[in-house]
Amino acid sequence: MPVAVRVIPCLDVADGRVVKGVNFENLRDAGDPVELARRYYEQGADEITFLDVTATVDNRATTYDVVRATAEQVFIPLTVGGGVRGRDDVSRLLASGADKVGLNSAAIARPALVGEIADRFGAQVLVLSLDVKRSAATGSGFVVTTHGGRRETDLDALDWAREVIERGAGELLVNSIDADGTKNGFDLELVRLMRELSSVPVIASGGAGAVEHFVPAVEAGADAVLAASVFHSGELTVGDVKRELAAAGISVR
Image 1: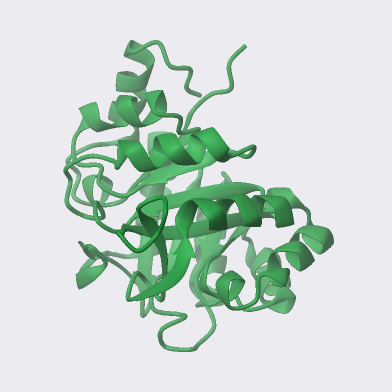
Image 2: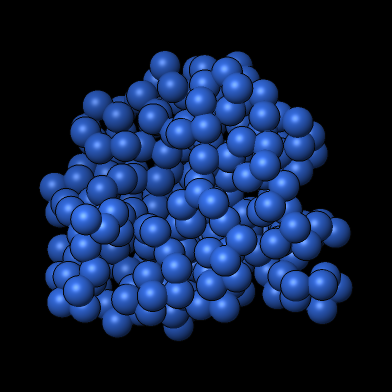
């Protein structure tokens, strides 16, 4: 029996509010994270991803109170990222109600952290978030960015994905900065390349704008599809996406 594809609403949070922009810029208010998480849980979301998008930029810890309040309303896996710098942050997030943690900038700054977290808490807890841009400067044509897409590194996105998997990452959250918030569809080439190299689940993120965008992402190799704007605006529900996937013969919960 095939593994069911997961549908994951994403809550990008800044200063305790859900925000959304285009290409990670011009962020605007999209609502209360606890209320939105509860709405998506009731719609049948398989997981919720909660990203404190300014935590690393502002050099502060993730807002644990919002995480705790969200976890009290949502009884499906909750992934929390943003501002995670060490094992103590992971421990505190798990104690606050998170089931998984997302890691990006801190892993790039100190790659050994990936293995330290995986060894202590298990690979299933660690979601390695890759904020990826197209770039002629790398062999694959894709470069990793940090700080909410604001800073480009010199890391080839595919090489970095291979390294973090070897170090113990349990999942890859692959977000296209170029597609983010555009509603023009997922970067299918990026999803396909990540699927070809990855031995762990790949979550496709960035660009969902219509119900017909989700099936191609799964066909390109995504094990889960993540979206924000279309859910926050009410243009689509989680149920709409699951019905579209099921109609294409894709297993969903």
